Length: 178
Length: 178
DNA sequence: TTAAATTACTTCGCTATTGAAAACATTCTC
DNA sequence: GAGAATGTTTTCAATAGCGAAGTAATTTAA
Image 1: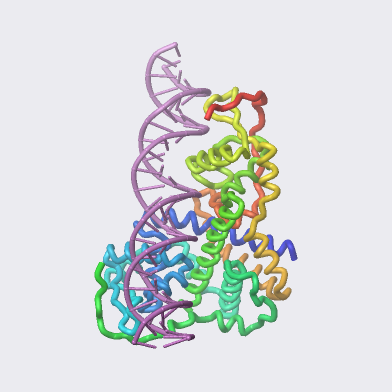
Image 2 (image 1 turned 45 degrees about the vertical axis):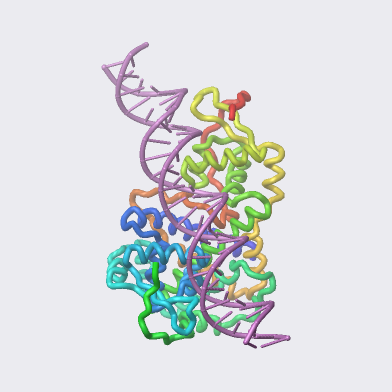
């Protein structure tokens, strides 16, 4: 059992190494950080999302989300419009340029992963996703009182899709001053 | 299906993020960075090693090795002595304090992961390990011109073991001025 | 309705890390 | 040897990311 935990950590380390090597290549090639690209991807996936949502999904601090958004906005890749129902927050979405940048920017690791991922069987995809979510939870820095035991297959189904952003509304455009 | 690949990458991102945040927690608690701890481990393993060797094994830039060594030297955890055969370089080794610090410093991530890991069911452990191995393989970048061996560390370093240092020589003490 | 607590985001100061180039030492070549 | 090329370490400027504290909007409670 010990060995298994260690093996997990070693596997993670390999993944990490590949990711970091990839980051540098990407930054040199496209001028976009992996984190920036990830944010673009998240926004595209969500259509519209708040800084908090980005922070949560990307696993970065809120302060970092602010910086990432600001940078991408400066590049003209996204637009912001204040929420009407809650004026503390705002909605971020991709511009044409953002979509273009996202799709033209190659991310070797993500592409490699995605295409390889597509070739494996459905149930294994689900298993992998579930396992990763699980590991993310295990490693998450939260209170010591988790509830780890008794997890079954329902885990997998719950891991299958993003929790959709609950709120959806707030139609009118309402630009945010820089 | 697309979503699943993305979700995997996002989960991975969160794991890496947690590892990094963990580094900071470790730093605050013990005054040692994961990278610093790794360097201590490397030095202990090698008995005596040059900055270049540290840089290579830890997978950090030479400039970073300099900074790490400087910091650890200030803490009194290591000593340096100029090489006699080649006066460009110098040898780094642990002090008593360094050995003590190394052995008393816990690695929270490793520990937290391991203990959490132990509490989950056997089949799920196996599933997670299998999935991680799979992901590592999917993501592996055996580039034709890159030597991926022992590059990129930073986090999850607790799971490391080190390749042996080839060189060995150069005995006499010969302190290096700061 | 007002005050307190919560939530969302931003600003600021800091650290770790890096690439590029400087500063030296060594080795190679003529 | 002299000079060039190579190798080792350091300095420097830049950047990403974070935590803590601050601001603003919302919700809860009294």
